[in-house]
Length: 259
Image (cartoon, rainbow, N blue to C red; front, side):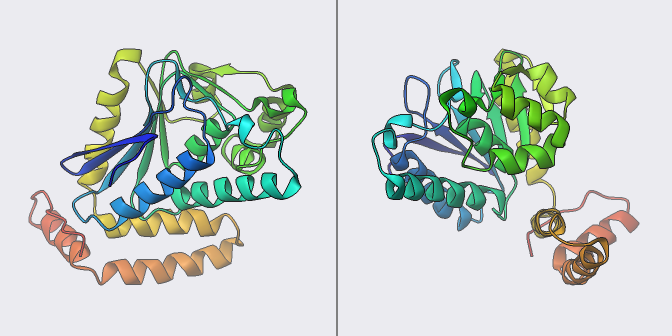
């Protein structure tokens, strides 16, 4: 389907979603709705194994929420906007296929919150990160206080959230906010490379790992182990598991089919 604020393209087993809302790709309600629609469309496409989310142009991945969407609104308007962003980002986080954020330029506020909802994050050397909401007298609303703490720890998250200052890509990597820093001109090429590596992995096992890491954060160790056992048995009974074990014993590369 066609989109006004997104660009989508298929590249064999990869799908690239580009937020295209100049000048800084701020997330309006319409952008959120289009992102939700694109995710649903690609979910049912069995040929797509991995998603990459990025921003159009060198200036910004996503510079944040569109403040004009709620600046003059009442509490009910703000609540609907924030709730919808939470729902869409949770859709990203629980997506059955791996989602990579390819971060170019500034990644602030809602942009950083979207990136944190992705499974893996690659950033160009010139990328900058932050949660500057406090500078406007507000707070993050799309997971910034929750996912940031889970990724980098309470001490560092508190500093980033209270000061509202930007950090560079190397610092973001050092504290565990992102997975890799790459040269500016190589961002999408490296994201594609990582995406193709993931696309060759067994999709059912990857989906199970995603569920376990997500659900395990909210359980005790013993409850998490019970979940892991249940998922292990379910994955063990798949054709991919039989193919993987057979290929290992036969000293050949496995050919996973997602069954």
